[in-house]
Length: 221
Image 1 (cartoon, helix red, strand yellow):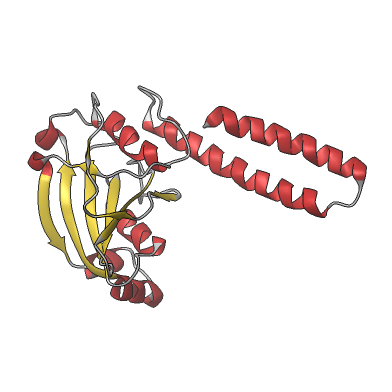
Image 2 (image 1 turned 90 degrees about the horizontal axis):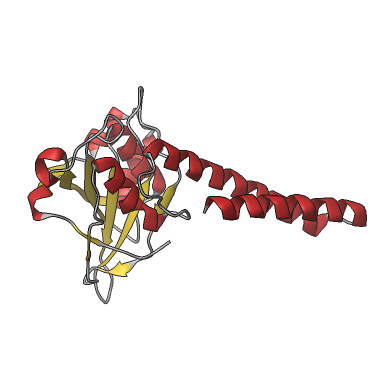
């Protein structure tokens, strides 16, 4: 994970305020989710729209455009359940800038879950995020890309544990991320079993399995 903020193109600026109610009503959220929106979020702004008509990059069916939303937190942060509800209500890939006030200076972090457009409701994967940074942190130019799908992969790559491969299809990237998460869970389980296993022969077997999973994980990232 790399701490990074992007200099979003002026031509892509949208700047529309979106009522919080629109998201939890569209996702048929529970009362607990509604309370999370109320307690966590001060306001939501659809700040940028990265699309063929704003940044002159061709789209695809999986990535027709990329949305950039700014969420201003009421307190210290915005929960993942709120991000997921927003993601499920927006069909297009979405990146979030979460802003919060601090006693010394405003802070911001960039967060996203890998999401591509398919039939049915969007299902975002695990959320990845930078650390908190000063809102005055120098922003970097967006990665050079030949299409919206390649731009999307490049934008979220610094947030994830995997490297972006030039020209890799976004669905393949999603599959790699899913495989990484699965291997990380398996490694964690094996490490726990190894710590608690009293029998030497079983320890040897567990170490071999753990080494195999670690090698598979290294090959993916």
